[in-house]
Picture 1 (spheres, rainbow, N blue to C red):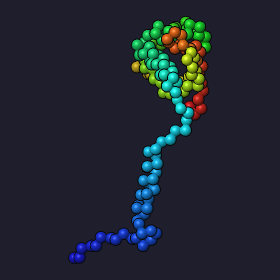
Picture 2 (cartoon, helix red, strand yellow):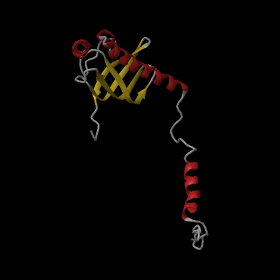
Picture 3 (cartoon, rainbow, N blue to C red):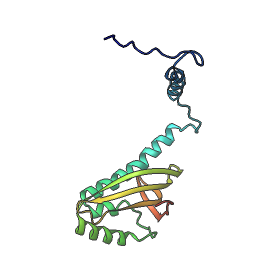
Picture 4 (tube, rainbow, N blue to C red):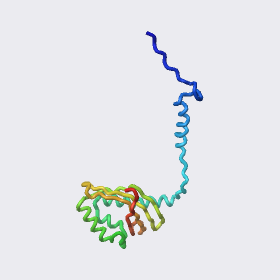
Length: 167
């Protein structure tokens, strides 16, 4: 019985390369072009980066207050004169009730957009979620926070829910 000969590549069509070889330069070009990322956005100054970091640290404090189940720490993160969406006293009552029912919770920032950012004030579009151990108190959403710097700390002076499309 004679051994079968291996099939030869058909190089008679096109440039003489098999189809897979013709695609190789195209694939290589696509992969190599993705390595060089060019940003056309504006340059962010060092001061702006520091301000963003300071504002982001405010939301880290919110996360610590939720993690500790500490109503007082949470309440202090809001301005004494806040009225929108509720007063500081109502925020304290809400926090006390929330932590009594569900205990400590995790506050997670999903997205932060800086609409306006200055040394004394900021407007931030925040997407977040709060998860409780029992799962019954979970909530989240997107809100626009107006923040002001009081001494060395940022506090929320007003907050409003923002409806997002698609959900």
